[in-house]
Each structure stands twice: as C-alpha cells, then as structure tokens.
Image 1: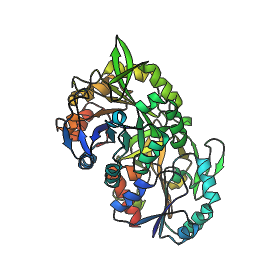
Image 2: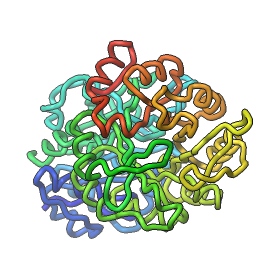
Image 3: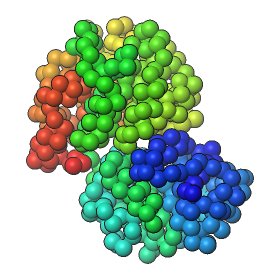
Image 4: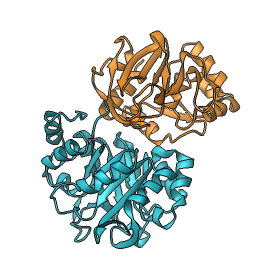
Length: 203
Length: 252
C-alpha cells in the first residue's frame, strides 16, 4: 500500500485525487507503523520547515521515515516534503531535517536578483542535470511544472536531478537511491505531473 | 524563466458557467467541470472558479462541483465568491482549491486577509479587486461591481498586500465586457505599487490584447478572461503560439 504521510501540514485532497487519476491507490496515514509497512511513501508539505519538522518528530514519523527509507522503500518528498529530506534548513533559524539527502535549504533571496518576485510561483521549465532518474523517463527537457516556494535546496551534489532557471538555477528535483524529491507540485503540474506520479507508482 | 500564465475564469451560478457583459445579462455557457477539464487539456495554466452571486445573495459555493473538478483537473485552482470568513477558506481548500480569492469579504473585514495569510500562507490568499474610475480616481467596488465603496483602489491593494495577500487580480470594470483590450493604465498603476504577482482581468477581446498586455507591461504575470475562451473566440493553444512568436515565454 502506498501511504501519503499525514502530519497535519497542508491539504492532501489534490494529492490523493491525483493518485486516483493515475490508477494508483494511496492511503492517507499518520501512523508510524503503517509507514514502516508501506510499499511506497509520499511526504507532502506546505508551510514553514521548523514547524513541519517538529510535527514529524512529535508524531514519531521522523524515525519511521528514515527507517523505511533505510530499508529501501521508495520515498517521494514534495515541496516542503522534499526540503525535509535534507540535512538542515535555514528558514527562520536553523532546523535539522531528515538527513536522507545531503545539502541544506536556504532562502531563494540569497541567489536571485532583487527585482524578481518571491515566492517563485508559477510554471517553470525543467532543465535536467542528469537523465537517469526513473521518475522523469517520460518528461522532456524544457517541460514545465508548477512551483510555489521561497526557499530552495542548495549543495545537493550528485543528488541533483533537475533545476529551474529563475535568475539562478533553483533545485527542482533530487534523487539519492530510493529517496526522491520534487520542489514543484506534480499533483498541480497537469499531464507532465501525472507522468511523474505514474512513474513513481511504477517503481 | 517563469512563464506568463493564461487563466480562464469560470463564473459559476446554479452549477453552470455564466458570463455577463459588464456583469449584467448573464447567459448559461457550459458545465464547469467539463469546461475546466477542456481548458486543462488545452493549455490553461490555472483556473478560477468564481461564484458571482454569492456575495450578493449569500449563496454557498457549489462545493460538489469543486470536488468533482479538483478530482480530475490537476492544475492550480483558485476559488472565489462569497468568501467572508476563515471558515470559508477552510471549506473550499478542503474541497481541492489551491488559492482562495477574496473581494467583498475583505472590504467588509480587512482582517480576513491577515488571518487567512497567517493560517494558510500568503501564496494562498488572492485579493480580487473590482476597480472603476470615478471622477478620474480608481475606486474599489464591492458586491460583484455593483457598489462603490468610495475607497481609492491603489491604496487599498497596497494595504492588502501588506496584510498578506500573495497575488492580486485587477479587474477593470471600465474595460470588462467591452473587448477593447486590458486596462493598461490601471494595471501599470498597480504594478508600480506592489511586488506580488499581478493578474490582469477585464477587457480581453482577442489574441492581440494579450500580446499588448505582456509587451507593454512585462511586470504583469498573468492574463485572465472568460467569454472569449468560453465562446471559442480565442483558443488557448493559438494564443500561446502567438505570444511565443512575440518573444513572450509561455508553457506549451
């Protein structure tokens, strides 16, 4: 069973619907036991990093997620869910993440020209840094996906899969073994987004 | 770079999409769910569902239509009309809306913008402003454009952005339904005043009006229209082809 992790952050309606649309069954759960037994795991999230990381810890989900990832369960983090996969974030202070992917989450404002609007919101093109990530097998260079974020993942090293250009290259997708992350919202990215979700289901 | 967005607006009443000229003389056009799916399949970057009668008659939004749409259409969905409380935000967000647009509700209670932004994030709160010139001054209108609030519009929009509105829809009542082009003067004044995304609404009569909009005002992020899309006068793929030929970056 695929589990969408529910830890009281954000709206899971579209995400759950989008898996129904690609003919996959996904269950919403905040139970660490279910996450440990899941075939696949989706970690969603909107809002502030510090609050979200604390909620994961308070519910015992941080340990369930790292244990499941450690034993090879495919895990996909979306938006803030992707940022939580990293070592740490500098959003309003410094907060530890799950440490499943090396790198840190930093303000976009540090790297883009000051005349560009923040958040980075809207449709932007994917530029691939490597083409071996199975989630993007059916996605072309330059295909657009939908972003809403004010922080970005820096120093991802070899985990970097794709970037979006917004005055500077911003990390759009990452992968390290069975751990995947999308800064954009595949569940809001039309046909391209559905291809990515379907590919995750087919792993 | 980020693309310019093309947004069809579906004005919904009694479960049907309607579009009036200058907000009067409404006529049934199509099913909202079908139309939303069609637009999503044909290149719309985002959709707006607007319950145009809600603020006047206190009618509840048609959340079943929203649920059905959000279950089959996977592009950003903004919902407006009759949003007066944080509970109204909650109700439509739970039914699949990504952003919520406030208009009369914010005029009655400006704290609504602040409260909603604090709870759901700025990116979730869209201020929709119906604006019309009164003796040469931009005034904010309430209740679907029927009531002059007497408030100066640019100051009102700035105040809402300071309180947390993450995006502004500027709907010019002066140009709405006239199909003579967007209200460039009004939009320019708003772009000068705020740094959040600005969506132009009211006046699109054809493809060239969008080209003029984005060429003249590169700071405008999106163009919104209803009847020219609903009646098939402008096909979004054709519109995007022309925009791209004119050097405007769009998603295709």
